[in-house]
Length: 79
Image (cartoon, rainbow, N blue to C red; front, side, top):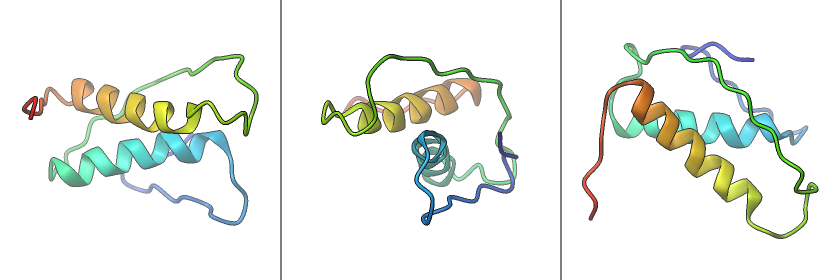
């Protein structure tokens, strides 16, 4: 759990939530909505083992960016 105005990514202790936070923070910064970002409650579940080499971390970053964009009523051009 993290607050939308206080995203701290711990680089010393890698955790799955860091990937979600990266996607969230990247989209918030890209859309320039730092002070107006909406919070959300999300649950992520899966069976892909950690470090399995299936790009699961990249998929989680993309998922977080998309859900952040949607929750804030924003969109991006397809190009």
